[in-house]
Image (cartoon, rainbow over all chains, first blue to last red; front, side):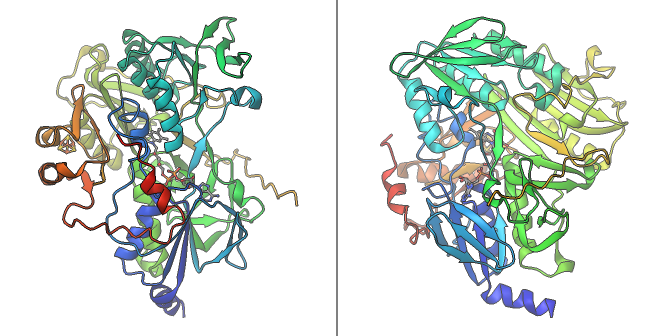
Amino acid sequence: MVADYVDWLRREGRIVIVGASLAGLRAAETLRAEGFAGELTLIGDEPYEPYDRPPLSKSVLLGKASPHRTELPHRREIDAKWRLGVPATGLDLSAKRVRLADGDEVEYDRLLIATGVRARPWPKEEEARLDGVCLLRTRDDAADLYQRLKAGPRRVFVIGAGFAGSEVASACRETGIPVTVAERAGAPLVGALGGVIGAVAADLQTENGVDLRTGVTVTSLEGDSVGRVRAVHLSDESVVEADVVVVSLGSVRNTDWLAGSGLGAGPRGIACDAGCRAFDFRGIVTDDVFVAGDVARSPHALFGYQFLSLEHWGNAVAQAETAAHNMICHGADRRPHLWMPAFWSSMFGVNIKSVGVPSMGDQLMITQGSLAERRFVGVYGHQGRVIAAVTFDNTRWLEFYARQIERGAPFPVEYPTVDRRPEGRQPVAADFPDPSLPTHGPTVTLSGYSPADQQLVFHPARH
Amino acid sequence: MRLVVDLNKCQGYAQCAFLAPDVFAMHGDEALIYNPHAPEEQRERLARAVAACPVQAITADGLDDRGDKRDTGNAGATGDVQEASDGR
Ligand SMILES: Cc1cc2nc3c(=O)[nH]c(=O)nc-3n(C[C@H](O)[C@H](O)[C@H](O)COP(=O)(O)OP(=O)(O)OC[C@H]3O[C@@H](n4cnc5c(N)ncnc54)[C@H](O)[C@@H]3O)c2cc1C
Ligand code: SF4
């Protein structure tokens, strides 16, 4: 019976993908590559076909690529019906229907949700509306910000020194624009990489001429008489004049449209099993709704079965491929999403990459190179195991450490390594901030593992 | 032609920057930046870069056939996509 259903689905079923970006596109390609011959619909609220986001804060801001031309290459034809420029507004799980903002309803036999995240806006709405207050998530955001940078602002102010904010600051300095960065934590990248590596990132910024203010928060944005932003007020009472403010306060998961649907979706994303099947709000797994990409939260065997939300490009691709595969095969052929978390960024001419989950690390060892030279490998340890590694301009060693993480290799790292310095003989505290205090830029969020975690709350829709 | 580099895979070997310098450039010692939209006259160089990358990190489409095989025909917004270029 079940086998028949899958065969039927593969031949003539209807698969709907909500979210037409990186994960949505790669899932569609995988479905076709693995023989799905039925009807495929992609629904996306942006009026554009899938495009790539990482260049938006890098080559685009440097003027080396157009914000309008980062469309993703297709790996194959996908013969899909595209519904672009129209958001999905609701999901009826029992009728298996997606509601669209234009009133249409689209029926599915299996659904993939890949609605990603959006930039967290500046919380004070009136201030957020001031001309010159920018976000950076979409190509329209990037086009707007690029135009403003090109116009030669007197000063750019970046709120939040996570990866995105730091990349913006880097682009400003490279194009000769004065820039101030404010970060609530003690250093940039602290949420993602901890205080030891954060200190290196801080030096990198100040040496490149960034006016870096740490341990402060922005209290308000001040506009002029015609509604343009003109100054930023900080918690230490200082005021910085700026005509462009980039709000880089992390992201909000696009799950609002699922409110009241009965799916286990909320501010922390959509929880799913290792096979990418979504949970409903009772924690019971569904079998016809799948999730992939930035919006997903899934348990990972290598990391104590913690639910990981990874806002990583590589995760979106890998999870989309696994979800698509699992959508159209029989139970025994399904695969778990066991991707080794991997991330890259570049700023101030330095290539920063990581594998594993650095924010789980309590301790850190610099096993190769040196912090002072900004060319090193840092290895994170958790409960006697290697749990993550980060490299600054040392990418070629990362693969080795990824294997160490997979093997659960012991920490501290005792074996000899190439270019080991005296500073790397002993582990030090990795110095992550107290997780209960929000910082601006963690790229990995852990939740739902400890039995003390009581955060599973269901918020039914108002109506 | 569209292209994307899987920068998790990329080892910064710079072969691509050597073979297609108008599309790929090293930024510092090992960070790669690139233009995700390569102009038509870069076709051959891009194809060489894709083939030469030792870790096969570069995906490009439209390399082997000239026709636009992308199938977004049903999208209401396809027109916008075509017009969205700012001409750079
Ligand atoms: C500026 C920038 C730089 C980045 N740099 C890096 C980097 O260097 N390295 C790295 O690893 N990652 C980076 N990332 C992260 C990476 O781009 C994301 O991990 C990736 O885009 C996730 O893909 P996704 O398809 O899951 O989600 P998204 O790309 O967020 O796509 C979700 C899509 O769904 C749409 N959508 C949302 N709600 C609805 C709805 N109700 N109905 C219809 N459609 C909807 C959204 O508009 C969007 O188009 C960067 C991101 C940004 C913004
Ligand atoms: S050739 Fe490949 S590995 Fe080398 S820099 Fe280019 S993309 Fe990276």
